[in-house]
Length: 223
Image (cartoon, rainbow, N blue to C red; front, side, top):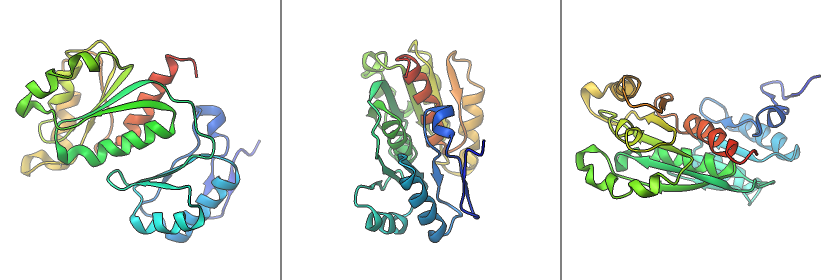
């Protein structure tokens, strides 16, 4: 069984939606515009929803010209074409420590929405003013999963995981000066956390965090 479509420069995994529940996502960085357009057209003709990450305004303009249904989350740099929208289920919260973490959070939000999750956002509630976070604690407890996005010291996900009884996915960001080391300090801090229920994905990995959160959330509804 072949299970993929060969475009010479790219082999599209057409069976992924059967195996995983979601179609392949297009990572735009490093690809030429011609390659991206070829992949987009092939996935569109297959009837798939199309999700594209790290996409520029130039890419969006080209694809929107081809299909006016495409939408662009400029902050998250995500393009989406929902040909077969999934029923939204459950609830995933996306929380950021600072305003500068929002672009990574928005990548997660767009991914969650295309993958069929009800999503809510709480931004700029980091440990420098932790009382801001505590005012949302009752709301956070209603979620099936929480994505906690933080740079600098990466402390906020540990605080959240210590206050709720649902899985928390920490997403370290490359935000910060000097010893923040482009996100490595936040990553190490999250990995070293003693808070139960906190798992961690790669630096600036909004898409990866959203994929895991979606699987947790949708598993609650057997979809």
